[in-house]
Image (cartoon, rainbow, N blue to C red; front, side, top):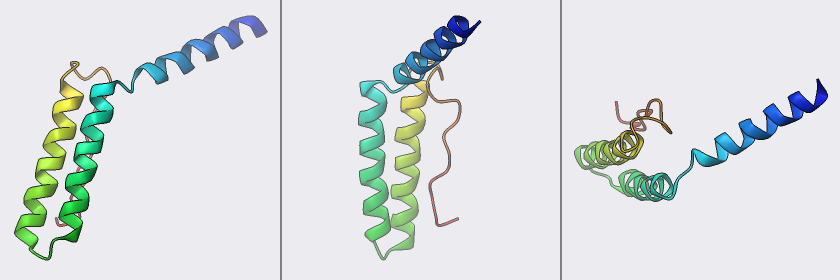
Length: 80
């Protein structure tokens, strides 16, 4: 029974590690940069546009694999 539990835990850990592809990481970095740019602008409409662009980048990365790594993309805009 212990061996089965250990094996299950190992498989779960490997599955989680596989969820973060290079494309996902690149998209997250791009989205983070857009969000930082949005946070530093005093123009609210520009901030909203940059946050929307960041959300689109994250959503596109999540949908690139049919949603296998991203079930949903949270709205990161603080300006709603």
